[in-house]
Length: 457
Image 1 (cartoon, rainbow, N blue to C red):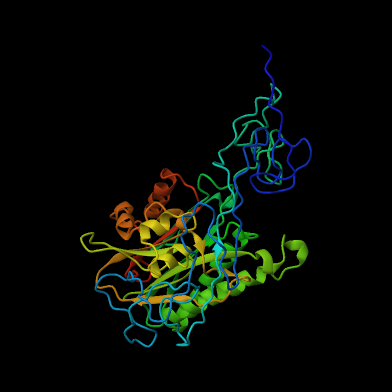
Image 2: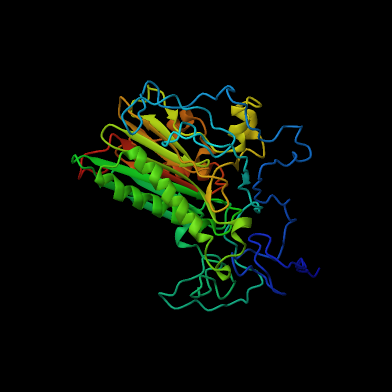
């Protein structure tokens, strides 16, 4: 019986990346998606930023309420500082306990200025429609047999293994987009290291990180890491995360040697990162897809600075920092509180953590860096651990597979303090083994910071 090729579904846009298509396209020119057998389009779940009002719950949501602003004096969610460790403000005074994440992108502790934080109810859904997987396409059976092998030294397509790759990064034979430079990144900066990976389901890596070491005025050292996660449903999320990570790390590296308190330096670094992301929306209309107020570039940020006796974290969004003692008999802890729908539900006492994070709205973020953010109030916290340990700074691409501090401690290698790059690779591998549904980025920093000149083993 004569076989018949399935007829291509008529499409005007790629079901993967929404790029316009031309009649007869077999592959998307932007992401290389195979258009020969187009699956049913998933339900649209766009970014939503609400200005003072919340949408009704989706059908079948069981009547679970949307975020609400708790009344003053409402019960707060317990914080997650390292056990038995004292916190300090830039003046050296004891910090109050970290309160629960409020239902707006405000700080979980009093801001450095001491001014009250006005409520806001912006919610952004960071879940653009995605196909089930983005595997490398198998060789096209319709490809002309006997395609000549490119000359030695020519870059060959990773999909068909025969076509030459053009200057734009696409195969001239099958049209498949080739892996990008940011698909997998690693950096070893001595005592601190980071790894970032595209994951198994996204067509590009929208995460970014920045690392560094600085000499403090007293001759001791400081080690820092910044991790940013681009908001997938925003315009140019990869540019946003890259701009934020560079601005924040450069600000810290400039401020710390001048004697700026690490907590103040972290606050200023987040402000600088916010300005860098905001500036992306100010470019000419020809350089962006949408107006800034509709879909500006956006990302989350989490960072850590460790010195010989101080641990400082800062964040906006739902990327996290964890504390894991070298002595695994001591309790680990999560150091950050998410700016997210799920955190709001728990803080308001409307759901427990298991229920909130199982909900499809769990990752709707209520705080981010971007021109369309309702307000910016960087979260910072300072700790003085009484024993050596490791700080894990990561995006939700990792903590989705190790959410509790105990789970993170279980998968972190025992020698993480002296082999940070190896440990970061292990953590990324854990996320990929779990399904790799998102970009995954993790940085590993030892505490206390080693003396100047000391590095990882």
